Length: 224
Image (tube, rainbow, N blue to C red; front, side):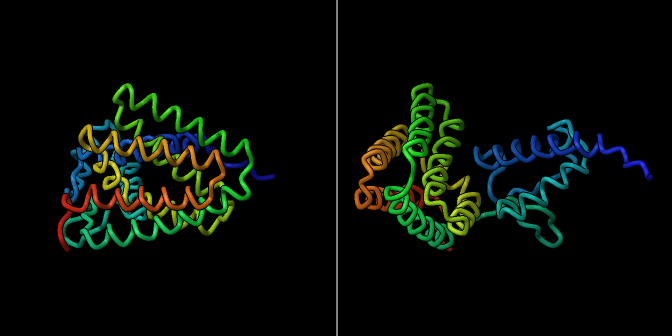
């Protein structure tokens, strides 16, 4: 019987790749790697203390997510989205979340809704502490959780793909105390409608929320 190959290195490598991916995503979200920035593997590898091989894998994965694009003669570049692209993606996300909200109010379990409430409460705690990145991640987790309550794999897949591409865009939508406070108020209304199983109310609130998301970022985007 042939011995299985030693897989220890492969097992250890995956957490490293995940850690690099998380750090690079955060750097893109927070603007440490602004749109249009070329990803210099040597410089970033030195900054993160990792070799080029897992870093290169992480960059390829980010390209598959749409956060990075591979440009001939330039290499990997942080994706720059124009206003038209962002508007179109937010419009699709709006329709997906409104549909998910209708379904969730009709069929989600009480336990499932309670899990969304728990995420919401954690998000509010981050808001009180002004931990913006942690707040943002929980904010996006809430949107994904509401979509997941619809129990439609195709809907969740498309939503996840678009939401990933808009990570930086959605983050800048919370810049400034007034914008941030308004986004929190919208989320308070979302969770109240979900807990009340007010399908029409939740759909309307989600629609306004995504429309406001566009209005908060449109002037900051290249008009292409």
